[in-house]
Image (cartoon, rainbow, N blue to C red; front, side, top):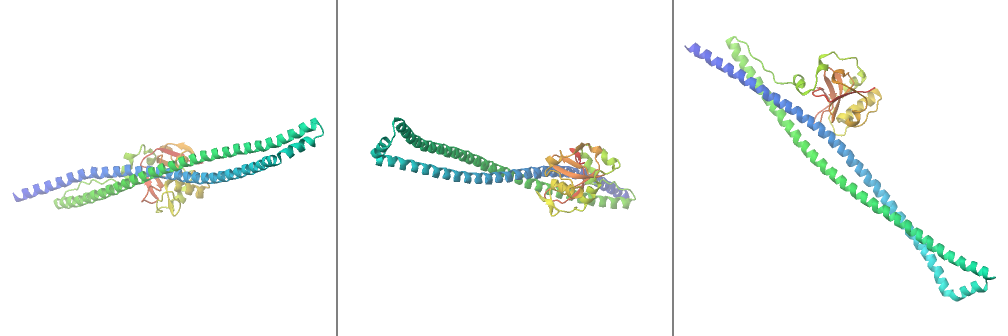
Length: 358
């Protein structure tokens, strides 16, 4: 009777252990899938932040350029004003001279004239001189007004750029805040996954021990790994089941592999730190002598599109528009993932586009 009770207890313990394990695996799987989803979101945010930083940099350049132009226009206005004052001063001196010498001057014009025709010519000459002075002054005033209008327009443009920069900086702060929250969520999910896997391993050990004591066999349920769960997040994995075709840029792959472990740095374009597109650009420049665009949006249009089952080592692979890596064969790519990570080899967990660089 005691043996029967003992056998029943052991059987119940074994069943509970197996059931607990089977239930734990989906939880770990869900955490892994959610982690991939959030990491992809971080990659997209990194790319958006990078593009926004470029815009802010352009804003700063435009502001500085406008400042220089405004300063130049200010000097042009001062110069035009001095020219106007100089001409007005000359005109006023002539007018004062006519008033002061008034009668004698007009008398001289009449008395010294050698006839009616000469008189008319002399009077006309005086009128022309006075009219010329007034005309020059008028033209200078028009020029000054035009310069002022240009300055007003440039001041307005500068104000708009400053406002746009402020808006971009506000967006940037919001993106960085959201990214920090997402990174924290990824960390928590990874902690949950590690905990679930540790608990599953402990249950596995307990179940194996009980099973061995009864001479039975254990039931094993593995926690998901990056290699066996990537297929659930990829649009197609047919390329990983075929031998890799001859490399188009095998030299690129070999060169890229030496940078494994280099930290991800937003905006990074050197071995001291890379972002995803900076890494790809650096590798192609130095390994193949090919200059690719700086960002993913440019790189996705830099070559010939290929489907996932046509990927060859050296091709660019885009899980989405905001992230790029270099395909190395076997359904794997080398890439700079996101902030807090390093250059590494990962499965092509999702496929948006492939690009072959010739």
